[in-house]
Length: 116
Length: 111
Picture (cartoon, rainbow over the protein chains, first blue to last red):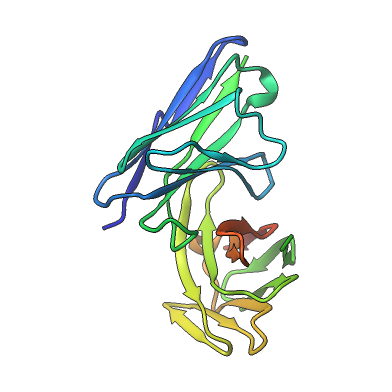
């Protein structure tokens, strides 16, 4: 149990376009979902925390207008990278938790975004 | 803010050798998680430690949390090429309900 999927697994887009990444909890209800970003050879950095039905909480330095997060249901959260630029190219990982706090998290397989 | 420092940053060992990875927190740990990641892939949960002095093992991997709950170690016995990857420690950032990750340790096992 506790499987989290992400779609797409990789995406290549042109600069200036928007890209949506989906994160789904397949067999449990995720009260909280987290979005992380990972640059090559670096650790994961938390971008934002989203609770179902409420606005996401963004970490310092993360532009909320650029990285739109929607957590419309207990099994789905989406991250939209708006007007993507090459510097947005990264590995994006989501995780889901049954609780509202940072309890045991279940991680998705990640989405590799390349912006040309 | 709480930080997790891992050491070493990278490690290359011969197959069959034992190795240890450390994770040191700047504050008391209330839940310490170990994950393994292959580059470009998601995280695989290994173990969770909560109590001071706790030790858990799974197959050839043993993780310990010290009594003061500020340091954890991950020990691999008789390493194999399948153990290669990036090992990350993660923790509930005390009092903030956020999750932080360590700096990561890249492990390469030579056959």
